[in-house]
Amino acid sequence: MASVHINNVAKAYGAAKILHEVAVEIEDGEFVVLVGPSGCGKSTLLRMIAGLESVTGGEIRIGDRVVNDVLPKDRDIAMVFQSYALYPHMTVAENMAFSLMLKRADKREIAAKVERAAEILSLKPLLDRFPRQLSGGQRQRVAMGRAIVRDPQVFLFDEPLSNLDAKLRVTMRGEIRALHQRLRTTTVYVTHDQIEAMTMADKIVVMRDGRVEQIGAPLDLYDDPDNMFVAGFIGSPSMNFLEVTTAPDGGLSAGTVTLPISVGTPALTSRNVLYGIRPEHIEIDESGLPLDVIVVEPMGSETQVAGKLGGQDVVCVFKDRIKARPGEILKVRPQADKALFFDKGTGKRLR
Image 1 (cartoon, rainbow, N blue to C red):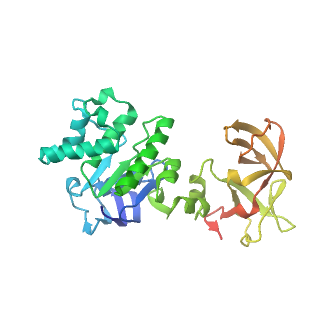
Image 2 (cartoon, helix red, strand yellow):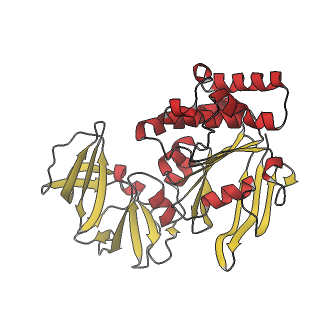
Image 3 (cartoon, helix red, strand yellow):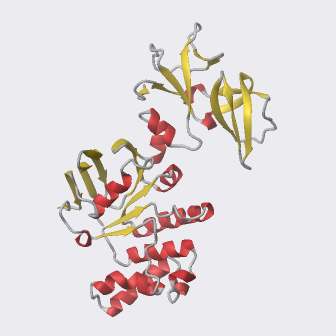
């Protein structure tokens, strides 16, 4: 195992800059997720760690070694791709053993490592099958097994679950996390799915347009975002943002309603302010504010309601099963102590 140090790394194709001085410290044994929208540079960064893309500027270290000019095969990493990339003419056991066979490892060593990986991933009954005889989840486990047998210093995952159905993605998330807890190998995982990031990571790196927006533990990013992008990207449904102005009574006006604020609210001298409130932080209150109900989505354990509050779009998530229908008025109240405030122009959090 080893730490990974990404020091002011840049990537450019000619005049087109893809990554802008990205700096991330990944500790030995840590599970770090790179997350962001498509095109933000997260997969490019992962491929640079793997050696599949050259480094335009900055430095990448794995352990104590600078690997900028080290070939991928010499970096002691193992990568699991979005496509399983299994050899169709080889059995599961042969696919898992292939990298060791190329290194001319001892046959007994190969057999022992394949058996260990197969046991960890519950693949022992499948070792004699071919990829065409496996489900999507089984193929993904084989791809993971192929990485495990190499016993690398670092695992790299590039959106490995995007080809799976929703239920299987949930199952595989748990399996990958359990695998990390068992092996404690440093892991860098790329996804555009913030739910994957929240449920799997020790630390999340939120990226946008080739830059790092914020780094932190999942709940730290959720509760204490630095800017509107992070606040809106982390969490599902995403945070509500309401345009507000200062009301005569010292409160905040959003269209036709006055929003509650807490004692700790920062001084809001600018009119260019957005009031951020997460859907689960809006509660039903018979003496509250009128929400014009537009869509009601019963989810079983909770109810999601989309509507208009003071003429602005809002999504609420209630733990109760409510009987509201589209076109009706529902009285709600945002939890004042949960509200966050942002500068509309810069997107930065006001503190």
